[in-house]
Amino acid sequence: MKHFLKRLRKDKIGIVGFVGIAMVIIIGLLAPLIAPYGPEEMSQTHVMEGPSKEFIFGTDEFGRDIFSRIVYGAQVSLQVGLIAVGIGAGFGLLFGLISGFFQGKVDQIIMRIMDVFFAFPDILLALTIVAVLGPSLTNTMIAIGIVFTPVFTRVVRGTVISVKENEYISNAVAIGVSPVKIIVKHVTPNIMAPFIVQVTLGLSGAILTEAALSFLGLGVQPPNPSWGVMLNDGRALMEFAPWTILFPAGAIIFTIFCFNLFGDSLRDILDPKLK
Image 1 (cartoon, rainbow, N blue to C red):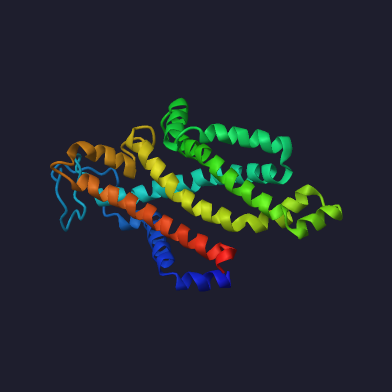
Image 2: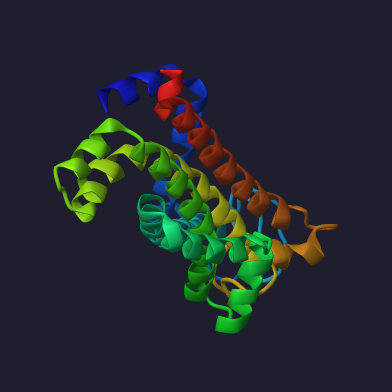
């Protein structure tokens, strides 16, 4: 950890990404304190107003404060990102460890199933799953988690196969250590670097996928605050009220950009070949 923090302090791009992520997390956690209005609070006298001192991001067609909705929308994006990536990373770690360590028929079965999922574009597969389960926040997180599972599985499997070639694994097998103990104590700790990097990059992908599904009407349902829902609502108003779509789009771009910056920095810092 000391070495990691030392290298991170020298990486200005990584610090920018980390600070940006910290800002989004703080905004999401403190949304009730930061937002001047409720996310669904309407005003008949302030409909479609441009940015001003009272409404810094303007209002939408229902008189709702766009800044407040973006702030509360950060909660939705972070919730979807963490839970969806948690689902995909959890199953991906399990399948990747089993597939990479035991190989043989088990490996063939797991990877062929993952190849089936890889045959579909991510957004198309997520759309299909949500269409079957029904549009809701919970089903959106499940769909994104399923879509991300093959990516984590492949990353973990490849790393496990590489780690298995080390002498300490051969020695553990030779003295009769059980496979479960080898996986838990010797393999898993040594595959965490690329796994953590993939988790960080997966968070940005999950946030973008949620926004896309909500934009298409299959994710978070109105009037709940979601950046994707706000984009969909502002789509018809962008010609004469561009602020209704520019600020939600900016929030998505900023968040994904920060996660990608931090993920790239993590990859450079944790890669032993670059040390």
